[in-house]
Image (cartoon, rainbow, N blue to C red):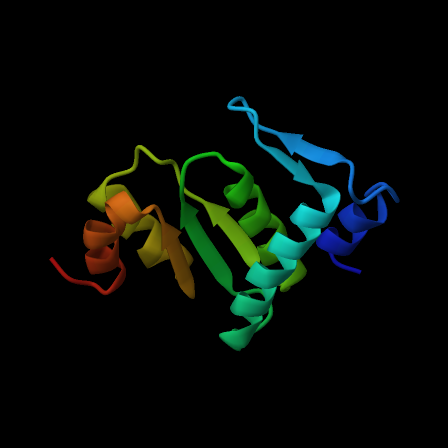
Length: 121
């Protein structure tokens, strides 16, 4: 049993009930959480990464970030959270030392994070 399965065993039986309510009034049910998590886990699984591979993530806190965290666990991978304030030097350090198989970042940072991830300038 992995950590996701343990967490899932504690989910309520009432799947349409609210799991997350955001500060701007959005609601996500337990069904929404499970569906989003499963979609992301399936995407990660389609990459055919070895169990225990690292997924480095530099995104703002959000329901989607939580779904990605749970999906990473569900897929048997390791979630490596990176501070959103990190710049190229810090990201380069973590990529070089942790050797993640996948790097996820916000769209606004993609241009420079992708260069660091590929070992570019």
